[in-house]
Length: 200
Image (cartoon, rainbow, N blue to C red; front, side, top):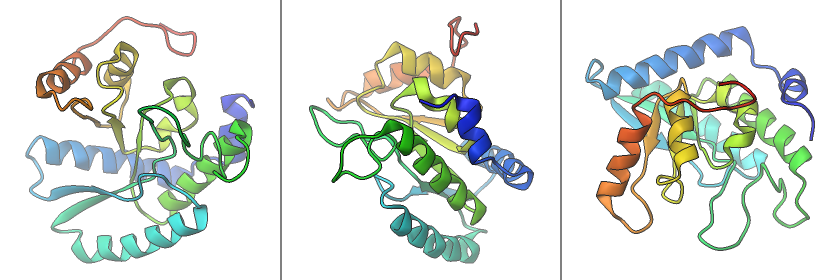
């Protein structure tokens, strides 16, 4: 697999887009803290594939975003990682075409390009944190991160969530147990000592 630096260099994030992501993150935080009266809407495909359909959806969603920007803060789900309870397609980041064999190298480039194209259309994007070990290639692009129902009790995901600059939503687990979801939120709200990417 290519080094993260090469992946980012191949599909870089423009300065205007970087500033927009920072602004989007702050606006989402303001909504969550009650400083902004708009509703936060996180909407879009559970699996962002194929790219052509994702971009068509994004263009239509952007028109809605412009129309309703005073009432809603719309964030588009561009979910490139698909958790499974047992077995199945794990999303375009691992297998960019579910009808051919897995190709993680190709999938990483495919999905980063797709995410940047959506951002360039003017939409903030969200993704679920499934494989935290390759998150560095994507996390700078995200205005919202979700910790899914199968990961909410995983210590690595909780610690990782505590370090992410974007707002993070945490689901209750597949059992529906609300206290377990609350525990995940509480754990992610506190600082932790851990090693990521070789750094403490």
